[in-house]
Amino acid sequence: MQRRERTRHLIELGGLVQKAGLVDLADDDRATLYGAMLELAAKACDDGNALALWKRRGKRAFDAEAEGSEAQ
Image (cartoon, rainbow, N blue to C red; front, top):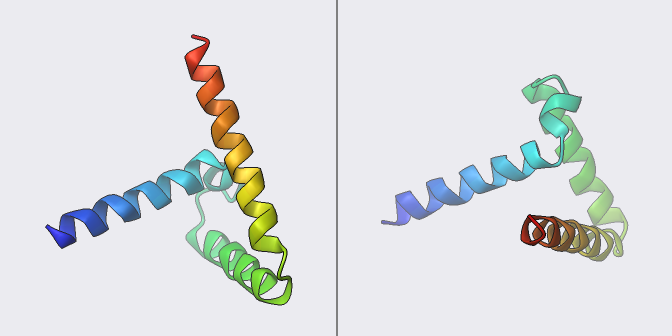
């Protein structure tokens, strides 16, 4: 059961990478994607406000997407 939950979680995280447009932007290059994520992690460690900013931006995007799907 735990393995199944972990697999689902990882698939959802991969979906977020796709949804953000990073897969196409990086031409599906895993080294580029990994490097970008390492850069984000370093920025979050250096800038205490980065995570809060990203969270607000992500929530707004999720909310806009939900509003768009409700209108259809």
